Length: 329
Picture 1 (spheres, rainbow, N blue to C red):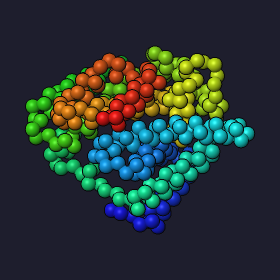
Picture 2 (spheres, one colour):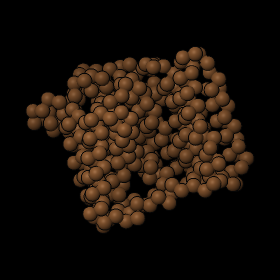
Picture 3 (cartoon, rainbow, N blue to C red):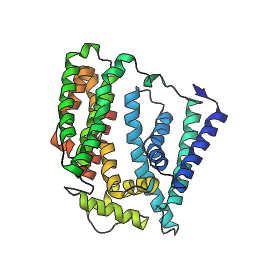
Picture 4 (cartoon, one colour):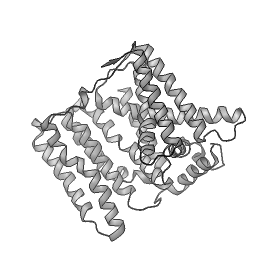
């Protein structure tokens, strides 16, 4: 479906007005969902259109997420520096971020439209056959088992759902291995993401508070940046220079307005969850889709991946390193 210029910019204006109103009026649930989608996918989507890259759906989603997170950090840094230089003491306030990101989105969308002489929206890649849906029934339950299981574990010290999860994941991988000749290529990336995010969430949600590693110092850096509404050097060595634990979560918190501890843990979990997809996309070019799937499962099974929420800046850095290798290849 190709949109004409009038329809394209009308839909763009309506979307931006809706997001701005939802954030300013602090509408529960809608603010969190729309804010997360806007920051995590929209900038990267238009930047990919600008580059005119022809990639498959899974690769497009991964690159959209990676580019969006990078744009959010770099644009936030530019806004912070420019407004501070102009004498504005709180460049990361809600109003300044909404105006800046809206203008940046309009600019990217306009350049993308002119570069492509229009924008085509195709939803054929999202369509699944009945067989593909059957193969995705079990993995679609994994995040639910992880979330509800950790809630049950925290409240009643009952790990029965978590044990079911840890049994079903290898059982599903074995099932896929025996029926691989009938498995569609569309199944693999969805299953990989669902398995990865369920295991990362299982670790991240095991407490209502920040746990383990260097996360407490990283969380302090995030809260300091968010509460001051600007980023600057505070004298904490390398932590000051890490935008992934200062600017990035502060911008997300401004848009989403949720419990800061949960945002800090869930944000890195969401970013790290795309790493197995990157491994799959790289591996399938050389060893095929099925063995690329197994390579991703091997990564997911490593203790360093499972403990990723405890090492925020390192996990985000490794994810971007994986994305860089994907682009290089």
